[in-house]
Length: 80
Image 1 (cartoon, rainbow, N blue to C red):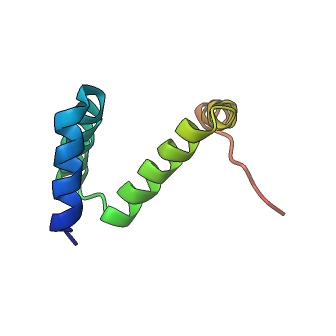
Image 2 (cartoon, one colour):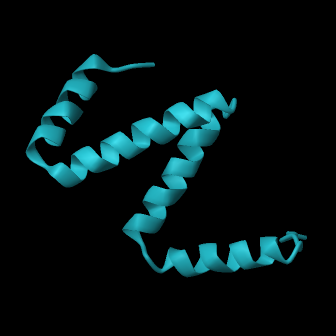
């Protein structure tokens, strides 16, 4: 599951860019928390990919906000 070469590359990027280091530290912290509550790595990866997609396309953020509002109302999105 771990890729030593990639981890070394990530650590080099962390040395070069404080923002990269901050993201790395936060992802590490939250992924440890996910493991502690029993979240499977596939679910965690899915959440991270969703966040990444929204980060690449901020217009998706509006969709996520709307989905959140629907969820808070206790409604469900149903495809027929």
